[in-house]
Length: 187
Image (cartoon, rainbow, N blue to C red; front, top):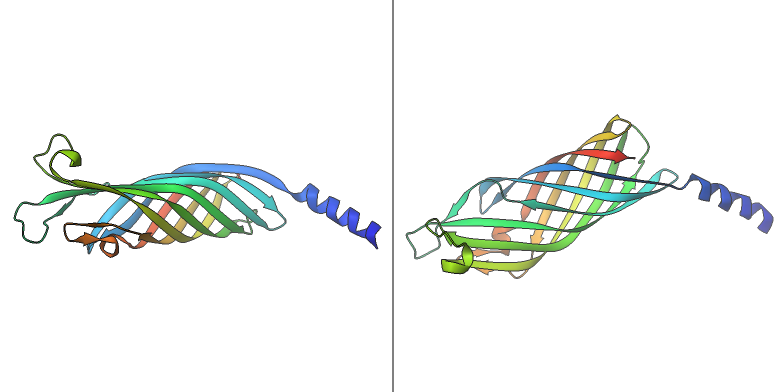
């Protein structure tokens, strides 16, 4: 019986494969009720076994849409800027098929800045900036279009902790997002 288990374990070991990917991603979301675009990218190293896989990597996104915000009690608007990113863990279901589904989790940091439009020196001069912890779980659906390329769709939810600045808080900045990614690599 123990002898029968050894060949099975060896064949499972032979089926293990490695790969990697990287590529640009664009997400659409909202901040305090206003639509915004978040371009960025992500990549990772893929460990595959059987019909499952695990990707370990990272990613990051930044606000591309100009977002002006007028704090309560002020008449002069301020520009909001932010970026976030960090390590990402993906559990991939059926990574070798025509399509794959994965659940991912990004844990990292975000940097926020609010400053007046006339500022030439950024948030430190006459505004506000803060770094906070962020968490972003996501569900992803990837379609293989070539042996080296996949196009994916994602749905995620951003969470931030400890942010509060001039009427904006973590709940104003957290929320759902949808994205499109083009992945290049060895799958």
